[in-house]
Length: 607
Image 1 (spheres, rainbow, N blue to C red):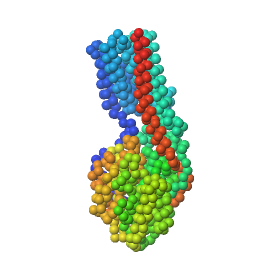
Image 2 (image 1 turned 90 degrees about the vertical axis):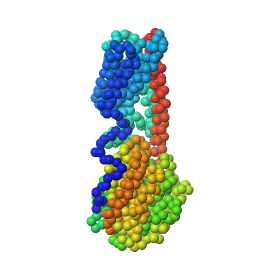
Image 3 (image 1 turned 180 degrees about the horizontal axis):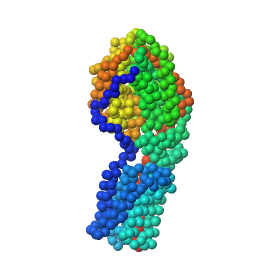
């Protein structure tokens, strides 16, 4: 039984969906063309003004025409060499090259004015500019088009070589100028080659793979969900994957006409990013269970990046197991047991509610930071509670108070021990308050959010309302990675004007990372008051669609599932951090080396 028609968020307008380049935003082609024209004029003026007869030919032949030809031809040349470089990015690349050339040209012209007897002439400066042009273009095309020098050097050389050839229409090419041009281009390539070798070392050392070769697949996966690119990234992760025995718990709320709602809790972390492996797990689980499962809720189960799944095939093992479990859960005729959603005492990290044969247990440290809970902690908690009280536990990590690098719960820590104690106390309190009672369930779904704009993924906001034991409780699930600290309490307070108890949860969906490469917590982009209004609207709609239900739950083991495993994410992040650090330092060092060696060439030419 599906939920009511999807609601629309209150805080945004809803233009038609459009594709956006989330990892590399380039301006429109028209904007790049306009900027290219302005920069070309600017560099020509810097070098030649007030010698006006020279400005126009240098503007056209040395800057504008090479830029436009290279901008238009680079994608075709890259494609011929089995690379890929889009026109929009190609036009933006020529803009970036001109931006690099402008300050260098200004310094060169200043040298001409201050020490004309020592500085090389304007034509030599024009040659000098082509070395950093090749250097930057090769770095870009190697990373984005094709991570092979033989495939990247030709499209990279288009702009500087065209500039040199057209310059020789304006000045007679002497042996000295031609030799200088060849040497300067060779220096540009050599400095780019050295930089790329240094930057690639951390990932090569740690994972025996080229990180630079993954740039193009990463862009294609994020921007196009290209299957070939996705396969290359999965192959990188699968090299380090290891088997694990996982399980999935499901709670089914069924009516005579079909399921009203299903809570699916696979012991899987919804990462690593984009749609790779288990990332975007809520969408994949909703699609796998289908409409017969009613409104599907996929909250975050307590686990961390150790249980990221590396590929689509491994994720499908878990979604297929969840589907089989859902189909095997038998309907349990009423009357049912039910309890309020209870917190055992002030400051407890856990709350619990009995529904039928199952205890829903929610854990959060809010308003303190709350993040991933080690699977070892969760496994012990579930075993202890089920052994002590004989009730199946559906354990949910609310994941609803984000502070960077804070809030993790590790095994064998005082915080872990406290969490286990609080969960047992919460279940004991819920069991003590349990009574034979009918159970009614209502659901509602709010869609229309955008990852880049709102920080909320495709499954939007979902409300599950439970009425049993004379009380009404509401669970609001937002498809995002954690909630801005301090936002959980005002949402819950607003919802408690409608129901007796409420909690707000997030899915920890790592697909939202691709918006800007950051955690992108809910409430960081979307207006906070609008989020509160949306939660209230969604719960109101769910309250208006309450149905009597029968509750059944189950658990299934899934053996031999490949996961990234302990330490993989930390090793990868360390390698990436080292790469970024080396990139920053090496970028400056190789550019300075290039400029210094190029100056030597020009002074040799001048003297």
